[in-house]
Amino acid sequence: MEINADFTQRAVVHAAGLDWVASPVAGVERRMLDRIGGEVARATSLVRYAPGSRFSPHVHGGGEEFLVLEGVFQDEHGDFPAGSYVRNPPTSSHSPGSETGCVILVKLWQFDPQDRTPVLIDSNKMASLNIADRPGVAVLPLFRDAREDVRIEIWTADSVIRIPSHRGLEAFLLEGAFREGGEDFAPLSWLRLPPGRPLEAHSGPRGARVWIKSDHLAEPQTAPS
Image (cartoon, rainbow, N blue to C red; front, top):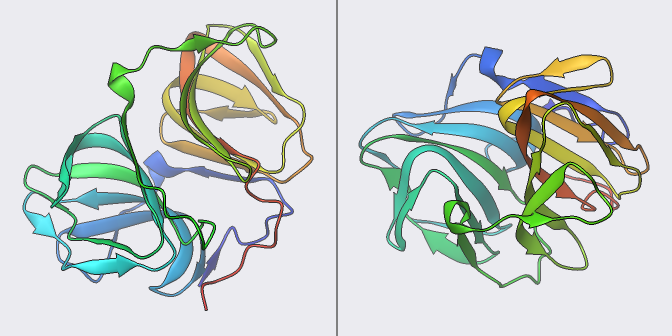
């Protein structure tokens, strides 16, 4: 399966308008944003857990990164409410589920194969940092290494937001609104720009809160072997 698999092109999905598609696990559904591969895939998706749904124990051979959007995600390592950012590196394992139901933004098989660093951050407890050379922007840093930069950006109302240089960028709108490329973005909308294509966005009258991952698309993206 291939969905938005040409990483040299701008890609947009307004996920709020997509149907939920059943997964092989009862009570777990998906909205696919990009994908290369079958059930084992390099994938970016929204995943919705019905109350009481759960996966059996499994290993993440290619790593798993997710942000909880609604409800409470759970596994044997704890309960993760909305706003939690989690990185389960390659070779990690768990039994994910949700007693009350939840929705997460999840990325699979997109780690450095040698990465063994788990991350758990409650972004609700973070203080935002103002960026001196980016007026109108505050940042909640989530993860950064030589390969990628992951953060939540808070854009003030009616601002022009520029990221002129990057090695690939994804933006997922959590709250508010923005306009980019002549297109309006509402919550649950996802944008991917190829390396070298600048971001120029205009935030809406109430500003925007945006999950951003950048500098991670310099190498060819392929399905897991």
